[in-house]
Image 1 (spheres, rainbow, N blue to C red):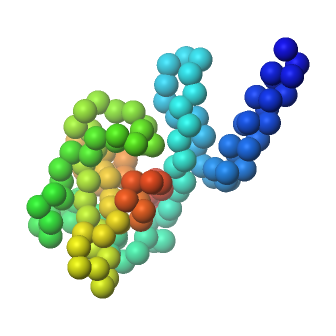
Image 2: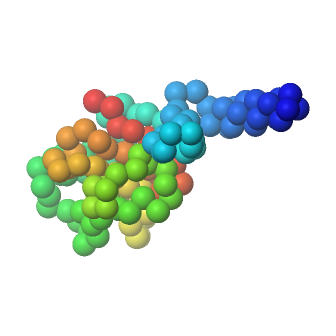
Image 3: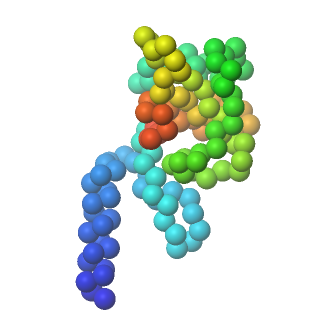
Length: 133
């Protein structure tokens, strides 16, 4: 029993080392279940200028450059906090020099898009950072 506890503590220490400081490690879930997430934070002033522009467009309701902007983001990766279907929408953050949509997105949640529950990814949904005002 003590060996299992030691192994479990070692695994937690390794995960903490990999995830890094300032990140949510245990997200929403049923009592007794742990959902590992890796959500850091980024201040709105630290976002690339294109992301700040898209966030402003989200808040004013557009217009958006890409047809997929505003479409439902389904959180298939399970990295964002679990919410009902349709809660999150995705928006493209243009990448200078790219000839496609690139990897940068803002995912906005809630009824008032852009007003609080916003996340930025620059690696096409492999990681997210919560946008802080």
